[in-house]
Length: 84
Image 1 (spheres, helix red, strand yellow):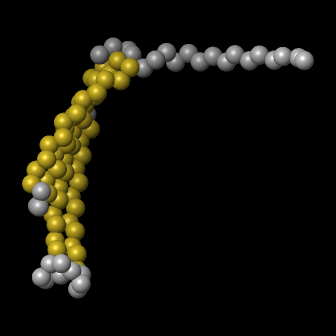
Image 2: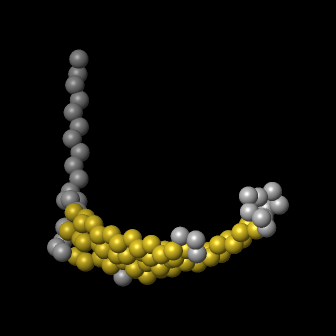
Image 3: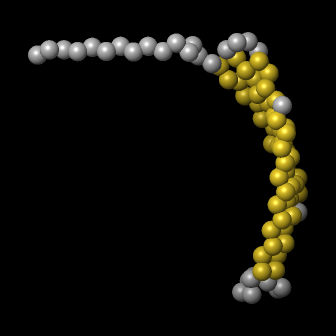
């Protein structure tokens, strides 16, 4: 299982700005959790969710799931030479 998070605080001070004060502050957080489940030796299911919380854009959930199929690990090399 993988857990993680992010916190970002951004402050902008700009004297030439479209806002009246020339200042902007944004607080943003994110959390995620991800898990892998081995269905067989060759198939793994990975699933998780991320939630982003932003002062200006509210909360956004991003669930995801995907299946990974591992092919055979055998490797081969075939060389041919021709004499003219």
